[in-house]
Length: 277
Image (cartoon, rainbow, N blue to C red):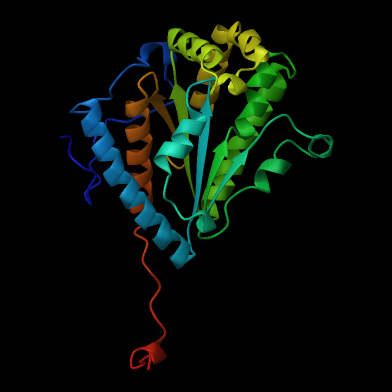
């Protein structure tokens, strides 16, 4: 079985972190990221990682000092919902939120594009997952030509400044791009059509967006390389194999939260000799 994540920070997978020169075409979406073991081994590993995450989130909530922001971006069917469901199961909902960003409302359009994002940022002691995020404002907008290159460049600078501010104010940001192949997306979309329990997920617009696959890959690559930094890294997650995707995300989350060295608050001194009769 693969080695478990431990206090030394060892990971069961080798993460891929964007370095400003990342080429998505050079990253195999079916890669196992050097995981040693079978699919069953990965399931056991993820169960252990989930237990660690539950404990870490409990300390996060109790300590009430740190803030965790997890950003998940991907092409359709890559598994954003699956990651949230599989990697964060068992976490106390009192200290966790999921924020999904779809087409902006009229009220949101009356403000700057980061207004609705900042309102959903985590509080102290909270873990927040963005299912899609402010990055939509430099992804779909560019692919569809709704903003020009000058606007995109300005927004990328603003996003870097925004994330730097969050980090300097105590937020740990972990960004995942779920990297799926075009062939795998085709199969998953087809599965949605034939499976009555999944057909509700299928949108005809998904086919129109699929035709823009190459444009999305180009814009994602440019965006990731422009906004990955040591304090706010982009992790590229090969996602053709769901079990690899899930153990990868779980392991990175455990590593990032363990590095915070969180502690339960010390009890008040007057409790030392207190007894419940």
